[in-house]
Image (cartoon, rainbow, N blue to C red; front, side, top):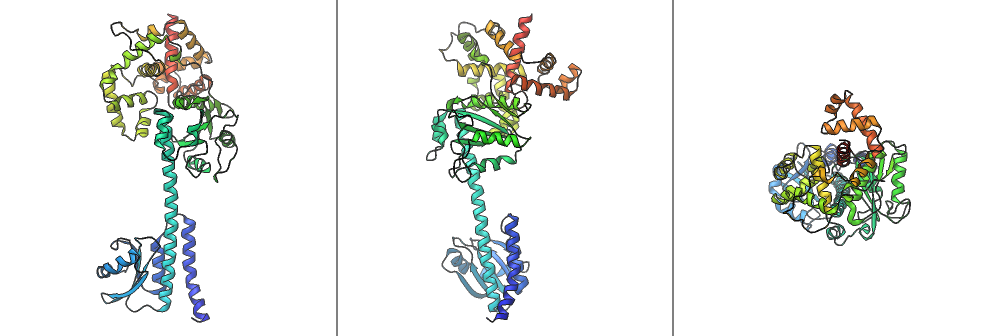
Length: 503
């Protein structure tokens, strides 16, 4: 080839390189059609990419005669299977040149068809186009593999969290055989619950992900219920900033807890709630604490709050009467399918739509399970006081160990169980931080079954004022009222205890 011919061909290849740069910068996967159209414009031949099954046309120029493929199954099979790299033949009166793309079988095949034998220049340009297609496809495959890896790592981290929440460290270890996260070797952890734009969660988790899919001694888990929440489980090593920090390259960085605080400091859209230090087996309690702290953090100047909650109501009631009441209330759940009972336990701690997203069920399916449980319990779980009673019974069943109460003796009613001095002192402590007008709004909201619009009508104020008062109450009480709503149960019991004492 002379200098003039080389310059001519280099000029033609410039268009191919510009197309490669365009596709690489676009980041949306290989566009074979654009490459094939470029080759057709330069040479006049028609071109197709045939999949590794030697039958499916993945992409082609508009005039490609697909009938020629019926004469080539054997040849395409050998090219796809790696026995041949390239071949030329004739079919249906047309000249056909085939070239296998990529190193891995089954390989796609580039099929070039023309009415006359291709010139050396056409063969060279076809080979260049084939090599470019192979490289773009490999790059596309690497990107897909990377995305798949991050998706699987995210699913694994959620499985570890779910294991800790429902079965403890042993179940979490069983879920991660061969890749046990270092967090599970810690004695205690803190849950940092970060509120951020949902689009930022992937970026933050990837920035701290190590080669094993974890975040060093920490885990960052996308909350499946609230899309703006990133759940960060950090091993508690007693240092102020927390541990578990690992950079994108796997090297140590500042503590992950401190990194999260810096994120909040630099972006007013962020907020952070931090639990107390808890054993790994109490991860569910740590998450609940972090949710309450996050509710308070939204209105604090630095948008970071630590949980400083009171002793839970279940921890101050007389053990045997409380356990008798709780077991009597929950015993009918033994008669419903386990799935219905489990969904009921979830539904008193989060919105029903959240339960559906968490379990991958439709809302109608969740509602059907809850109706079955409601019939058994004799409770209306759409009523806030019924949910608070069932939630307390579940908490008592988890925290109070003891023999089965004597069923010949009637268990106490809930008002009688809550009519002691310890419960009164607990209620007073819960409600003490509230301003009088916020307490009136909170009482009206509870009496309206947590319907802000109905509460506004009863109180003769606007719905926005009701919401504002509730947000202020969240910060004052350090309880989550409007997201998971678990703090509402404490408020229900505290208000009812106080009202009963006033009679």
